[in-house]
Figure (cartoon, rainbow, N blue to C red):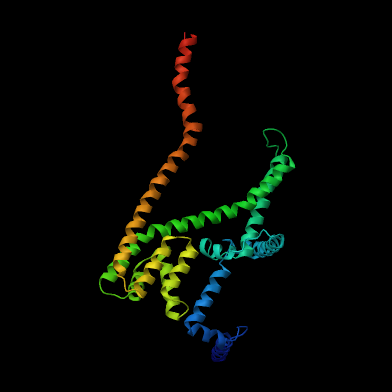
Length: 314
């Protein structure tokens, strides 16, 4: 009896292992897909497509399954309506790839629609809860809330792009110094850019590595890649780097000296920008000081004097 049970268990275990090892329900391997991964251009295109598809929009898997299709369908509908009305942004996909990686246009419009509906729903909810300084909130405030929420993702995207441009601008002096050092060490311009792109991190480092990769694939020259990078990032100083690069190649001018001159120019602009930002911070501090600190300061100073003058203390 025991031997029979043992043999039956061994047979069942073997059958179970064989059944689980077979690719039941699994997709068959795609030879064309594997061949595309073997080529540099195909791998670059597939990585770009994967980045555009984006990751999860919600941390909860249940919300991801329930709300993501609604947001994408609603965003696609809003995008079609705006494009037919002629108010759609033509370069929205490019701006999203820079400022909001992984966010598609349909998801972005879906986010705008969701924010607008949430902001608009706040006012009817406050009417139900009897929250209002002047009575019930009228319908025009609902529409204003929807417009505010609908425009909020655009402001967030513009803020992300501005922070990205600032990061590129702040990283430029160090990159130019490294290029000048590499060129002064006897490296060719191509080798200098390749070496610097491997050492630099951040937004500008990623962009330089992309330029080197595309130039290696033969898609463009290094100078054209730098111009495309400058146009994409919206930093005019990168155009000067591309011009200096082209002059060094065509006219035989020393690249190191040109990079040092550009680095000094960018540092001067960086100092000016820091001073400008400091002045803006001073202006921004006026509002909390005038609204929250100054009235309290006046009350603390004037209340004892007022009490003494009016004779209320005796």
